[in-house]
Image (cartoon, rainbow, N blue to C red; front, side, top):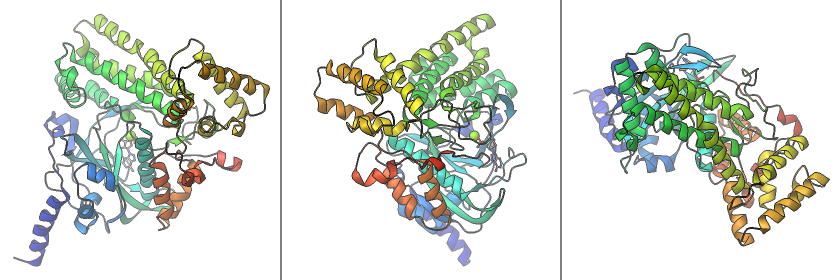
Amino acid sequence: MTNEDDAVKGSAATAAGAGWRFDNSYVRLPETFYKKQNPAPVRAPAIVALNEPLARSLGLDADALRGELGAASLAGNRVPEGAEPLAQAYAGHQFGHFNMLGDGRALLLGEHLAPQGERVDIQLKGSGRTPFSRGGDGRAALGPMLREYIISEAMHALGIPTTRSLAVTSTGQPVVREEELPGAVLTRVAASHIRVGTFQYASQWGTVDDLRALTVYALRRHFPGGASEENLALALLQETIRRQARLIAQWQLVGFIHGVMNTDNMAISGETIDYGPCAFMDVYDPATVFSSIDRQGRYAYGNQPPIAAWNLARLAEALLPLLDADEDRAIELAEDALGTFPGQYRRHWLEGMRAKLGLGNEEPEDEALIEELLEQMHKAQADYTNTFRALTLGRPEETAMAGTEAFESWLARWNARRGRQEEAEDAVRERMRAANPAVIPRNHRVEEALEAAVGGDLGPMERLLAALANPYAYAPEQEPYALPPQPSGRRYRTYCGT
Ligand code: AMP
Ligand code: MG
């Protein structure tokens, strides 16, 4: 036996030491849904970020992941025991245009069973070319992968359903974009990667049996209760609508702009997925767009709810053959389900806005009170997060509207409205603190942290992550992260093809 054999044997033992427990159900779907593919090895794997709390909650040993063999598996240089890497097939409407897509630079390693039995996808993003890569190189740059790590973890801390980031591993290889950039692989953890676009793919290129298999699979995996429903496709559609209505309301309430709400970037699980050109809004303006390629503002802040409804309509279309054998009846069922989206969304949004203003009960005038505040914020170019932060801290004089007659009148009405609640002022403040983050991942702070990290200094990113880990703490040390950008920093742009 050579030393090399020893090393291989050793690696298997240590791999088990990391605590992976793979049980891969996706490979049991019809073969049309994926292509088996191993990751392409990289030159010099090195862990840049490792999410220790997440590792722990998944039953994984962070020290083993940090070790040479752990890093090798997170970079795609070795396949952990039990993993069966595959590229998922999916389609999608990109800016309204239907395309065949698929994992062009990502691979599902498999599904890991966490200690409580929870099943999560472990995906490598940036792990090399796949049969779906088209012209792409299958790779990712370090900056954008760290960006996904920061923002997805911030979303999680904000209490918003999202995929998580377990690790970012640098590859020691450059990727060529407009310039040469250091390459990296992100390890993404998700309830699943089934998208609206996966159903569109099945509907366009699969058989009705394939579509049914995917529907049953998605229901079992995400909505176990729905699997006993008579009409499985309808149960899936209704539940997906329900989760998206809640998710999009949560985005709106914190000022999150996804940036590329293509149907392939909408997960059936109801998690936020695919952190490309996303960013948080500073100044309140429904027309806010950060993505450089979104010239029409299709995915502007204020358009996110109707775009979500549009995407859900594409899901309904894909499911039509299963909704009812009679096409007219199928369309009727789809329309009835889709028709509930605006009301569900509005209900979640109003509930969230009431909490942001400290209101624990409902009055008919609330909507007008909320809308008027937003209108004044828009006119005054007020910072979205910090306006609610100032109201939470009882410092309305710190908002951009302070001193205007309109705002004084609004404040008087808001105070009177809160006065009609039979609740102690403390309880009201508590509610506001729990609904209004004191810190969000401000674009200028994220950029500054990424620039330092890509240059080799991880300090600023680690401090930013620490501030974002508890956004409702209102801790004094978080204050520097709450400052909005200088006016010159406002014309922030994000880029796709990251
Ligand atoms: P995204 O904009 O990340 O949602 O990706 C849209 C599509 O482009 C997906 O099918 C990706 O897999 C694919 N894609 C993005 N970047 C690359 C790349 N560097 N190489 C190959 N495929 C890619
Ligand atoms: Mg995508």
